[in-house]
Length: 230
Image (cartoon, rainbow, N blue to C red; front, side, top):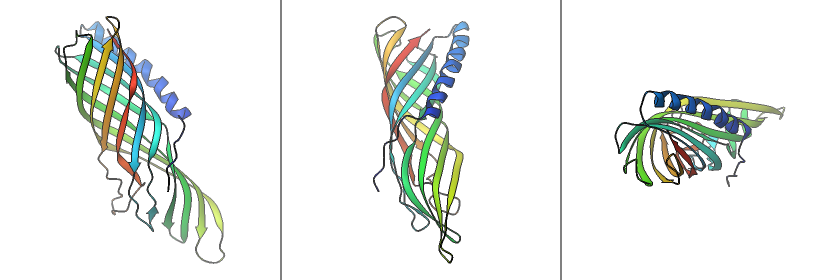
């Protein structure tokens, strides 16, 4: 099955617009305490490979590409080191799937997104340079959310079909690695290039070992935006 690219979703945009003011308020309160604070926001592309298939229970796996956003706030603890927090949001990816259930099977389209919250450590070039680069490592939590809409098909007489809707939503541990490159064009504002690799620690398996979603637990997001230093 060929995965489809999904458009930037309304709900993902709302989450971005909600988080940015909260990050700004937090950073300004820290800045008042005397620490150098950097706030960044980037529009990125999110890529997930095709997940596992466990037919006849669930399959095929799917992956895809969507538009995403990363918001970040960092507090300097040295000229080359900072600590901070990030939120990484994405639109849906979609795929057609089939699931065996008691009495028949479900045929549906799955819409999936992952939201990642990370605490990070950044180590790089001195913060007073015009071009700055930093390696990023950290960890946190990811919310995995999947909506399925389709039909239930009975496998015995009478052979009928009825609408079916399923929602899967859970929180798992996530590891974060990446890189930031900033090019300053004023003392406080810089262009930002960023990349993140997330590894979600669920293996996309239910407790009984059966594939849960068929979506990869590895996510690559990269793109660009702006960085502001207070």
